[in-house]
Image (tube, rainbow, N blue to C red; front, side, top):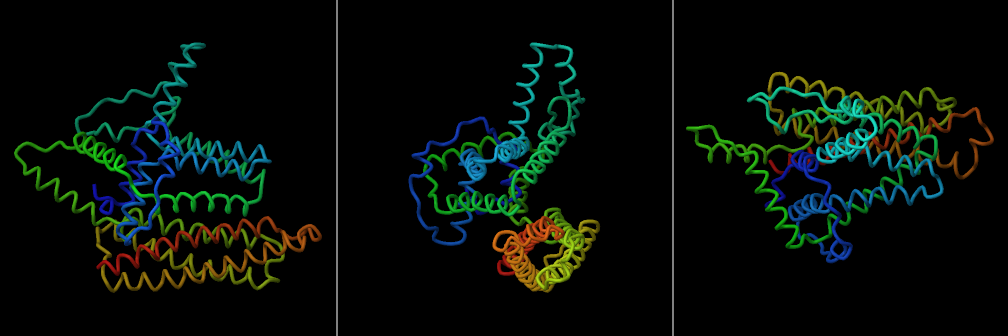
Length: 379
């Protein structure tokens, strides 16, 4: 299987539908052989293959890093557990297995209550695919439990430790996963396992219409999927990416404006100006994506993509500079000089929240910048 032709959306769908009940790979296999990728295409293929094959190991690794980083804070450890559980609920097999075990356990004590926890029975229609059915947990939609556990984990994170500490711990965990997936050489077992699961997926989803040229249709569908890039202009993923940019930029501005004394410092004023420019740019591109999706217009025009590349790279550089300068002043106030302790009227907590949101905005903009540049160069 050529993992270079697999898009990010396909990889996310595969991770969502794959069975996660299998145990993690052995430690000796996980740390066996590391080599440098020879090219960008080799690195891209290796990264996706390792993320799919060592998915359970990476999940346990990120939970271990979060728990180790907050070893002296019990509430933070509980928050890490709730975060991992909310992520695990996004997987179909885990959600179904969790629902069945909870229902069986409750049935031993109260069969009437267990009957209420069962998912509602929906009529089976020929036009409806079984893979698109809604997943229920304890009688409710899956997204309800994901939102509840995510909100609870966020509250515990905010009340137990510093936001900058949480950010650095997440960055360390994700960086460790990225480094391992980039330099771990895929072995023969990973490739054979990939071919086997690919054959099962094709056999399950392959249902040609009678009298049609099924081979040509399936081949054309694969070629169409190969051209889809996550975050491309005029797609739903690009719309979500742009929406996240102006939402976090606006939130950063709102939190900073509500903080007392921000106007006395140039770094915070520069942060507001940079986030305002970023919000206007991303909001305009969001409206453009909505228009393109509504009228089904293709935005992969060389002139438009060149404009997107210049705008994204300029705003990304300004956002990174503003976030770094605001972070430097915030660290100076909180850690180095105890300025926040001496002057409690200053909203140092809001300075930190605004800075973290600015960094999230920059990460989203940087993703768009790399995607637009890759589209321009590949065209």
